[in-house]
Image: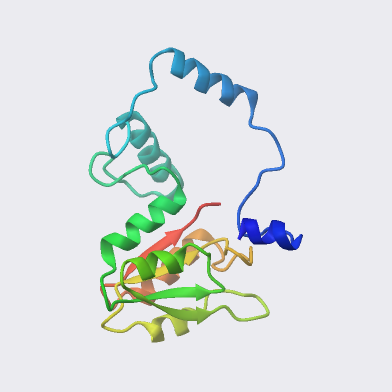
Amino acid sequence: MSALATQKGALNLGQGFPDFDCDKRIVDAVADAMREGHNQYPPMADAAPLRQAIARKIDAIYGRAYDPDREITVTAGATQALLTAVLCCVHPGDEVIVIEPTYDSYLPAIEMAGGKPVFVPLEAPDYALPFDKIAAAITLKTPLLMINTPHNPTTGPACGAPRTCTSSRKSCAAPTNVLILSDEVY
């Protein structure tokens, strides 16, 4: 998408490019950590202090407790995390519900796993998630529902308030075994 936007002289909404430099304190902290020997490959799930900090933050923000040793894995970026999640639970012939328009890395991940995307479009004028249509799209072949909020690429809230959205997502998939992959990169 970035190459195409450059070629066509278009505004690139396919990837986030900050228009400011990284905070000097962060750059200095990274350099200091490397000088102190924190420059080796971490364990596959990443370093325990980072996973513990993530668990504390999730608990503080969402009131949910996760075991940092068994339930939190740090990846080399959001795209790797999305691909890993899809490859873990989507098998050939499965149907994955995605909201349309959809983030450009979802479809290749689904197809790589042998799955088939099932599109549920956002609806004007508010572009909120149509939970009734999402629920209607769920079949026995559906292991996964992929959503993101704020929605990418429309940037709309898609879901509303976090606790309301979480409740709506849960009720939408409640009578099923469908997993919800909630991409909340922003």
